[in-house]
Image (cartoon, rainbow, N blue to C red; front, top):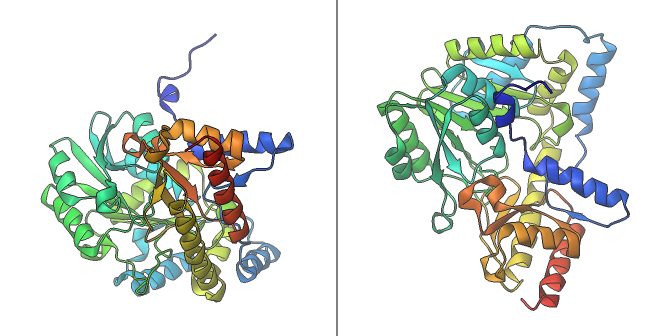
Amino acid sequence: MKELSKASYRLLGQPMFKLLARVQELERQGKDIVHFEIGDPDFATPNNIINAACTALRNNETHYTSSMGLHDFHVAVCDTTEISRGFRPDIEQVLVTPGANIIIYYAVRCLVDPGYDVILPDPYFPTYRSVIEFCSVNPIYVPLREKNAFRMNPDDVRDRITDKTRLIIINSPHNPCGSVMTQEELDAVYDIAREHDVYLLSDEVYSRMIYGPSRSFYSPAKRDRCQERTIVANGFSKAFAMTGWRLGCVIGPVDVIEKMGLLLQTTSSCVSPFIQRAGIEAIKGDQSEIRNMIREYESRRDLLVEGLNGIPGITCLKPGGAFYVFSNIQGTNMDDETFSRVMLEDAGVALLPGSNFGEAGAGYVRLCYATNKTNIARGIERMKRCLKKMGV
């Protein structure tokens, strides 16, 4: 048999989709499963967004468009960025992408040569590692510690900077931990990137999903207006319940965006114009349904955290954003892989081992609360009964 490329063997994929495939097979066999494994909102995409796409389809917006994206989309992003992040990027700093996930590949491929280093958090969103290893780049991990509420510590970043560092990745609000870095921490990481003249990729996919009295979001992009070193990755999947639409956006320095645009042009040609019309409506149209979703997520978070903390052997911090909890299961005397397997096979609860997100995740599990409160309550009760039966 002919050999595949060496790079192909370095592809890791995403563990949440691998587990989802297994769960769906169990469901086909008749097993009832409570889903906490994948970050897919249970809400429908708001009707005004759907209608915008339908109108565009009826208007025959079904052909190629610029690889960089529609001008109207660029303007909408610039308008929204000015309101949410305190600066207005130039049109040339914006690239429309087929989902936010691909931005990680674009950034690493365009900014980092093989053999150089990328600093990233651990636990991490799995695509970071998969892309980094696929591109023959060295991952340098910064552990996120529970005692610091899983926030990245700038001192740990500084300790890992070398003359081989080309990019720092930050993610706040964070997947899988739900942590939200403070403005002081984000500014400190930006200062480190500036001091050492490296790029900073700020993954802000969950920027609209922040809980608590202030609900305020801060981006390090405000420091250089994405003109010098900061690249902002964002998407429509989570906050707007548009996971199947595959629409994202990246803002960065003009020369970086130009190269990312050429890579998109090479691999994807362009993003469908009717999808972009839906995106424009998502950020410019009525936000009442979006606000209702965020309030419901916060309520679900509280229910899940309270329930988990009521199970012997489990503790759980209350996260400040996204829609995940990263729960400590070390008191159950099971490792996270065993715990997750037992919960799926014996309790009918699908969740992810923390070690799927890096070595620092060992002893934890990730649960996503993008499901209704009835399912959350069912899942908690099943976990409680299962552990009690085991004598935990």
